[in-house]
Image (cartoon, rainbow, N blue to C red):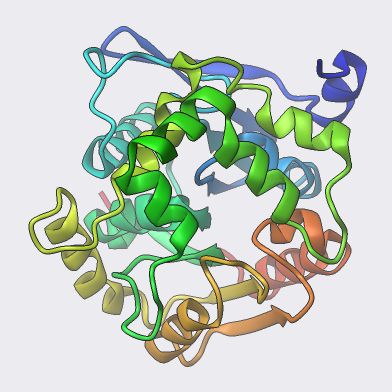
Length: 304
C-alpha cells in the first residue's frame, strides 16, 4: 500500500482532465508564464517530473500529461483505445490545442516521451522554442545498440507479457534499477507503481513495449523514420541534454546519436546514474535545467 500522506506531499498538484472520445486524459497545469510541456515515458507517469514542476512553476506554466493507460488517466481496454505511437501524438496534440497556448513551448522529454514529444514537434516546428532531453530517443535504434534482452522478452513472448501484466514486472523492475547513484526508496517505488495495480491497469505498460518498431513492417516504423528525418528542423533551437550513462536501454549509443545530430547541444552526462535521471541526480540536474531556461529566454509568440 502507498502511504497517502507521502503521496500528497510528493505530488501536491491539482488534477485536470481532457475528454478524449469519452476517456479521461489526466494532466497537470501549474503556474503561469512561458509554457513548459513535460512528456513522460513507460512505465513512469507525471509523478516523475514532480521536482522539476516544483522548481519551474513559480515562473513558468508547466503542463504535464499522463498518457492514456498511465498515471491518473483512464486505463481502457484495447477495444476502447488504440495503444499506438500515432494515437499518443494525436492525444498530445489535442491537449495542447485545447489549452490554446499563445507562446512557443519548451519540451522536456524522457523515454517514450522523446518520440511522442518530438513527433508532435515535427508536426509543429514553429511552436517549439527549447528542448530538454532526458534519456530518450526520437530516432530508430542506433546501429551500434543491441535490443535489450529484457525488452525482447517482454515484447515478443507470452511469458514476458504475463510477467508485465500479471506481476507488474516492468514497472517494478524499472523502479528498482532506474536509479544507480541514489537507489529509489521503497515507498517512492510504490508510488511509481501505484497506477498499475491490476492486470487491466497494466495494458499500456505492455503495449508500449510491444509498440517498439524494430522492423520496416512494424506499425510505427515509418512514422519514426519521418520524425527522425524532421529532427534537422531543430538544429538551431537551444537544447539541453541530461543523461544517466547507466541506463540499460538509453545508454551511450543513444547519447552519441543525439550528439551527432545536435553538436551544439549542452550535454551533461552522469557516469554513475541510471534511467530516472531526475531522481538519481536531481540536486545537479534541476539547477542545470533552470539555468538553461534562464540563459535561453523564450522567443516571440507563435505566429498565426
